[in-house]
Image 1 (cartoon, one colour):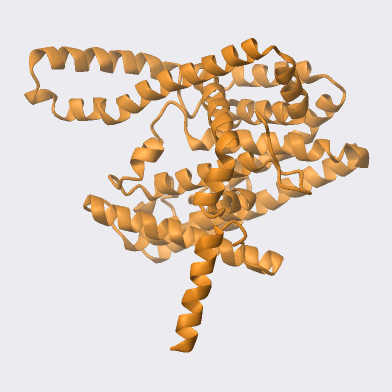
Image 2 (cartoon, rainbow, N blue to C red; image 1 turned 135 degrees about the vertical axis):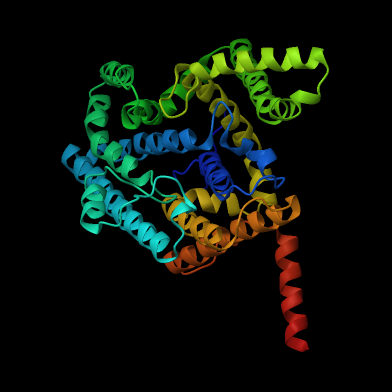
Length: 394
């Protein structure tokens, strides 16, 4: 668990890479061009753990990490900073909801995504959007992030006083009364992230203070639970679905197996609901995320090399990428109908991913004055220079 960061930076590169991976998965799942080969990587958003809760968790994780470094500025500063961020997220949410709703109506494509208001009474739409009763588009989580960021400084204050147990109890109590309330359900993931982020280096230190044998046992347990649960979840998405489609033509033994599997799967999902954040989903998320972090942290140099730093770049500019992906998904869905052959689905999804990467590169260029190409392997960069020279000479 050697969390390396770039020289002269407090960033933990593995976390940037993971956040970038989550954003890629979210784009692929929102494009919904299945099958496309990509969905074999994402699980179509139907696994027992998804990138969405990973994104919530990492938002809390970074809040805990980043603002802990700013404690010296005082709590007034931290409250002001967090509330300013909450206001930015709220304003962006309102603007995007109204923009996507108007576009769907203008282009006569109100079925582009579920949840659009059936009425075109704009005063009602604007009022409910401002009150966060209505959200539309593929950036509709922004208002939920805004609420969590508004509440975050209160939890952060408890952490600065060492009362993490009080924050944990309050979060657990709110989750216990969640019913179908999304914020009460998902705040527990955000809060867990904030607590772990605040105590990140202390937790890492405690892990390394354990004996090598104990560290190995913990690591093996994490990977074992992750491997077994992921395999079963993956099989339920891709194998059980096929069995259900062909159940009428299956031999009796396979029919029995399929029905038994369906019953078991339904029972598991009682405790792994996504909207209400079931307890099994929370536990599995912690195992899956821990395993993913250890893998990415170990191979981060290789990942950066073979992705040319692109995934890391996406993770470092997550808010822009999240908003940009919403526009890309809307545009693609506006002009491209689903249910295409697998090759076309692959090409369309690839085009969407390339679009996201390109606009993010231009954004980084605008923000920093340079393109993010430092991570491109030297041999690839050299070939690019040689190609430019050939073009110039011709």
